[in-house]
Image (cartoon, rainbow, N blue to C red; front, side):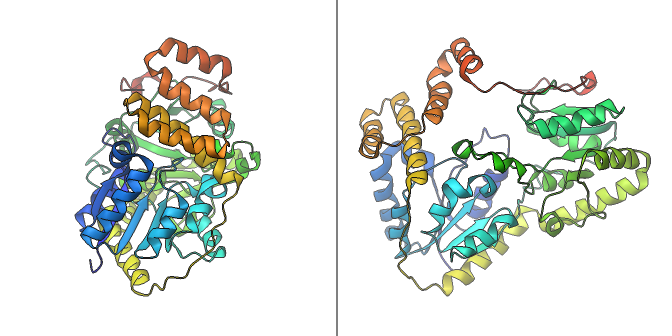
Length: 424
């Protein structure tokens, strides 16, 4: 590594999805310094965090800052990133930009030298803003996602993922069930409940057909933009499953052919009829199905092993760093961003209060009072999730009375043999 890189992100050992943790580990392994934004922010607060980062950059002679932000989060000010950009190269890695581009990501992108996106569908949008953007497909730790030797394929069709309120997913699954295809369903709101990471890896290995759906999850911040329900995106689940040697049958999303060769490394469907036809076909044609799974596995090991992809990303970043010329840009901040940024201050204030750090909580609330823009639905959600954790019965009642009701049910329960006793 020619340049000295600082990664500002979060390492969460309790996370079910290891994607972000894997990126943090590999950045560190490749020589980057690391600051955990939860640890720093909840120690120093808003202004203190900015001061700490600036001093850390100067003291350690950092030449590039990479901000890997969590979905929905607003830790740093756009203006602060622009200030940093005057003396260091600033890159941001955005997860789920398909959901958050309109309400968050495009605003932060103004104050960056490079956006690293996980989905190709948003690359053009950032470039239209005059912001450099590169694709970094979801990559995983192959020590955690792996193919088991001589795994027995004793599950016909399975899906792992959220189904509460996902009418499109429920419609697909129920169509298979109604036509005699047994489908094991795991995830929040499913009869089987949540799978532990270890059992999920085991399931991918044991399943003949692993389903993947591509609908974009509308952001809570832009929940009224219902047209988002038409959008489709490539998912990290493609690489996760392929790394475990699983055959993937995915709902089509633009850009999927850039990740895997359709018909050779995975297959796709466009509607319920095609899903049913291909499910039947691949259950009957084991040799062809396993050949595609083998090709997908080889592609995933070659292109989506984070130990191999991270050095390539850093090398690409260094080419941008070496040719950077700072140009002052006008920042455009409107009420959409301001409302969501200020609403997130309420969540941070609640967490500071729980930590008994009242002065830092007041710092967040002062910003809210100064701007007077809030999304009260999000505030309600923050209160339910953060404040009422100690009162589970009250929390459950409030969710039932005021929350969005789950829609749809699975037509028939899956077999009992794979029901998971892990955490929900």
